[in-house]
Length: 411
Image (cartoon, rainbow, N blue to C red; front, side, top):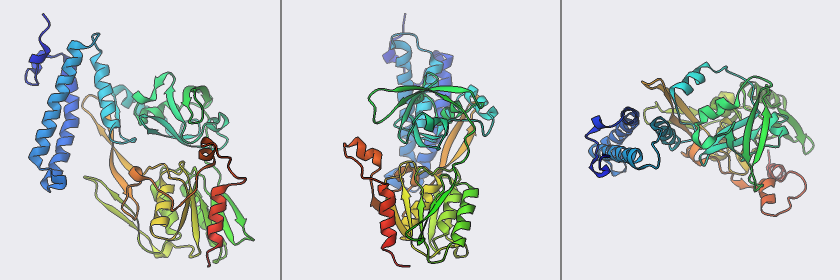
């Protein structure tokens, strides 16, 4: 006879299946992490929470999780695969924290550790938004660019697997491979009603070339790095040093990517003599303050920065520092929002957590990953104008606005 579901509580765990025991064990790890956080907050009375209250709340949630799982076991329309239920729950648990936190099963973690570093890919910076893989920006002349992928496109599935059910670490791993190999993706574009199914051929995509040119009779030096690598930041320094001291600087950080936040701070320091460029903070992470070094300043001339939704990582730190410290105008649209540090934590079953342990704050105290960078001079992208039925003016409106602002500034 099937037992009465209402008679089940957390105590009689011995009666449940091995899958249930495994679920409770692994989930308990996460709950006890929550308990530790609640205890730490409670010690100081933060948010009006005391340690005992936090622990009681966490234990109550454990009882709720256990009951929910038992209902699934006893009342679901078919006998569920509890291993899949466990994996799905843990993916959801980590995904609810932020885009960069991930749960990896033992098999996923094994593949993750064995993957070749620097493999071929499609030329996109990828993250997650609204639960799905999202294109942050696209490298010029890459396979993604040739297939007309753009900032904000949603990759709904990869090789038939929904990205909603995959962690960001696994998504990035699935997009990498050998040069010449292919991957099938289903893309949802903001401007089209129906999804597109594309086959992308992986390639070794070079770092976008740094662009520079002169405007306004060589009174404004325009620099577009494409990616904030150490080499590109070195090149920017060389160009600023060789320019006249009176020459104004326009940094175009649209669709600028880069995984090294320090390069963004280096770039900001070229223009900022003093002040806090950024702060790195976390619950158990030693707080780090990054201050401007006056010895590294390269230009005291007016500067402006152009950003868009594809501005990512280190480029956002540079834009935030220049804007918050009133060193120059930031023109364009809200950036993507990325600036954090992850830690990999091995689990007893062979799986792992990739957990965000610290986030960068701009000089104004706002976390880049949570709030992104909002320009003090807002200019919509041409794509936004087209979406609203507005015909964009000729030329690059963001660029023209930034040039106009610089022309008005004296040296």
